[in-house]
Structures are given as structure tokens and as C-alpha cells.
Length: 145
Image (cartoon, rainbow, N blue to C red; front, side, top):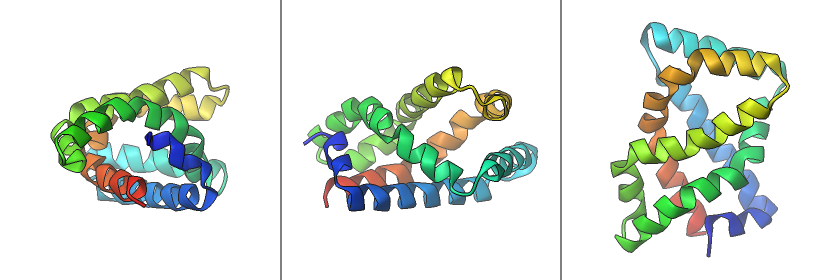
């Protein structure tokens, strides 16, 4: 079964969106330093657009994100440790996720989102890599339920 197949189950999808939103909130909150302040400010600006904006964005990006992650996940399944595989290949995993957001942002007509994303994009990859262990655990829980 492909990762994307489970998205048809609305209850499962909503739990996944909730878990991923919580992961994003936790990751952003944990970032320190000057770049952390910039990311937190940008995240607050995005969340200020409308309540639930980030959860909605995660939900909209799930099909494309799962399509991008599927080949890496499948490789991980061959090792009998997909979570470990994604974690050990966090750069490749982050690139897959960011390729989806990069494409989506390019098509966006929202200048606020584009501006915030373009200012933060170069520093974001390391933070996405740092979130891969949590992301992999969430995907594993989702895929096995």
C-alpha cells in the first residue's frame, strides 16, 4: 500500500494533520538563536493569516509530499527500518519535502507567504532535517494503522 492510499480515510488523515502540525509547532518553538527568532517571527506571521492556516497547508500538501517521500520510504521498508532509513537520510528526506513546498510557493498568489518563505528558505533545510526523526515516526504510525 502506498503512503497516499491512507489519505482517503478522513479520520486517519485528520489525525495525521494534527500530528504533523504539532511536530511543526514543536520544531519551530525549539529553534534558538537569531535565525530561530526570524523563523518564529515568520511562522507567527503565517499563522496570523488565519487560524489553522498551517494545518490547512499541511493537509493540502500531503498528497504531493507523500508522493515525494514514497521512494525513500519504500527504500526504508526494504531495510526493515523505514524510520531509521529516513532519519539516516535526513538530507534527502528534507529535499523531498522542500521540493513540494518550493513548487507550491512558486505558484502561490499570496505575496505574504512568498515573502516569508523566500526570506527563510535558505536556513530552513537544516531545520527540516532536524525534524525528520519525528516525521518518520509519524509516518510509520500512520502507515501501520
